[in-house]
Length: 135
View (cartoon, rainbow, N blue to C red):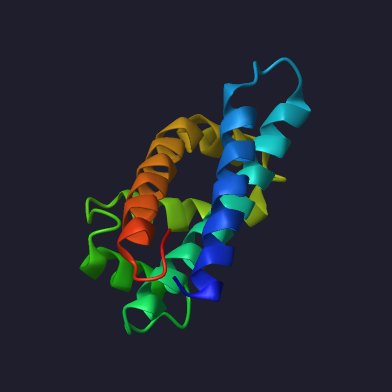
């Protein structure tokens, strides 16, 4: 396994655990929405970098989020059902969550996004186990 992929996979797994935790937290205060969106942003960043690491381990291009996602599709790490396009769109919208209506809409989609991140984590783990240096 490449050092870059191994490191990216660990960061993604850690970000996903934090995102999972906040999505499961009862929404008792407004700051829960803000924290969940922030953790979503971190998880998206870590996810595409883990995809990029996997792509590079296979000699595929992954110079940015879009290219990493395309390579992840080729490797079967994600499915092309529009879910990842929605995740990336919501990541771009997340910079505008000062608009409370938009923040609430985005927050409502986070459990669906979480499921796709969890599937990616499973697929990346299986991919990692198949790499020559995997233990």
